[in-house]
Structures are given as C-alpha cells and as structure tokens.
Image (cartoon, rainbow, N blue to C red; front, top):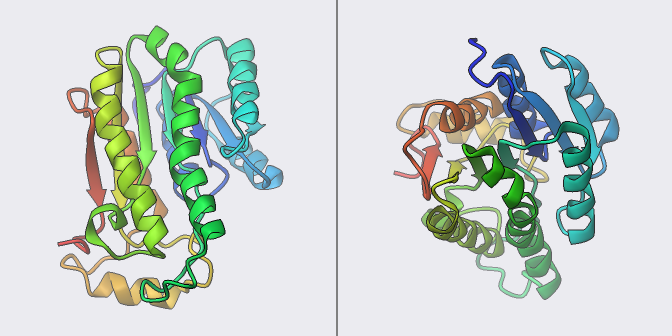
Amino acid sequence: MSQSLKGKVAVVIGGSGGIGAASAKLFAEAGARVVVGYRSSEDKAQAVVTALEGDGHLALKVDVIDTPSIQAFKEEIASRLGRVDILVNSAGTTTPVAHKDLDGLTDTIIDEVFASNFRGVFASIRAFASLLKASGDGVVINVSSIAAFKGFGSSIAYCGAKAALDSMTHTLGLALGPEVRILSVSPGMVATDFVPGRTREQVEKAGAATPLQKVVEAEDVGKAIFASVAYLTHSTGTRIVVDAGRGL
C-alpha cells in the first residue's frame, strides 16, 4: 500500500479488536501513526499496536461514556503526537433484546446503548474537534449500522441510537466543514464478537441469504473506512453501507 497517509495521525477509539483493529492496520500500512483507544482490553490493544506496520503507534485507555476520560485521552495524544487528522469512532455496546419484548428493553439498557453509541461518539468528536480543524483535512468516521434505517438489529434501542448517530453525522457534516469531513460507515451483520451470543454459523447463514451471498468480515468494513478517509475526499455528512446487500 502506498504511503498516502504518511505524516498523519489516526485515532481509532475501540481499536483493540474487530472493525477498529482492521482499520488501524490499514492506516498504519498507509504510513499513519495510529492511536488505539481501548476501554478494558489493554493486552489486546497492545497486541494490535505491536503488530502494526511502522512505529510510533500508541495504545491508550479511554472510556467513551466518561467525558473526563475522553478529555484526558485527547490531551495525552496532543501532548505526545501534536496533531490528529483522523478520528474513527468504533467503540460501542449492545444488549440483545427481541423487538417484541417491550418490557425486556429496560431504561437501564436504553441509557447504556445511547451513552456508548451516541453520546460518547459526540463527546469524542467534541473533544477532538479543534485538533481535527487544525489539520485542515480532518476526517471523522462513525461506525454505524444498517439497523439505523432498516428497523432490525440487536434491539430497538440499538436501532434508535444508530439512527441518532447517522443524524449526527449529517448535522456535523454541515457544522464542521470545510476543515473536517465526517461520514458514517454502516455495516450489516459482521463476523465479529460484538453481539453477545451471536455465532459464526448464524453470521454465515445470514451472509448466504444476502444478494451477494457473502459474509461481511471486519476487514471488509475496515477497507470501507480506509477508502472513506483516503479516497472519498469530496464526501461528507452521509453514510457508506457495507452489508453485501443485506439491507436491500
């Protein structure tokens, strides 16, 4: 891969595994210095950093539902690296609840899902906005989901939080230009351990039923994130769907 991102700094929040780790790998291969933000999986985050091409990469702790933690994370990056050009918001949580089980979707679950998938993303963008604007060519990628617009997903709260995230992406596309672009990358069912209890067999069955008859791997979403940063230079405020046609 060409060194198209040489000299840039990419921050991947939720970068210790899955889509975040796949994105970090591609950014490093393109010459960027990468910061892998993790909440609790320090060993996994360090392993990701160790495997990245090049040097100067970091693994730093951050909790997206705790704004002071995000601020401290940003300040350490600013102090150690001096700039941020790319921010990927890949952290998030979900608790599966059948959509017909209205009583099962408790206030606690709703608050947790919105805190990690919406509020925490906004707080992260808010914290890094000045550094991204200073870059002059800043990019934010929010990892969303086709659940935002298809009405199926791990819970009604998850669908709602991702819909709110897409709305945020649209609104901030207007608010942050021209210095910063922002896009949502929206996977369908991905072969990761993000959804508790989901098996590889279930993912493969769903993949076989898509128009392309393909399973979406974390690396496929990572490629879309990389392309959004490196190639879609005239796109902002919109979403890029990576679902093998599942949402059609």
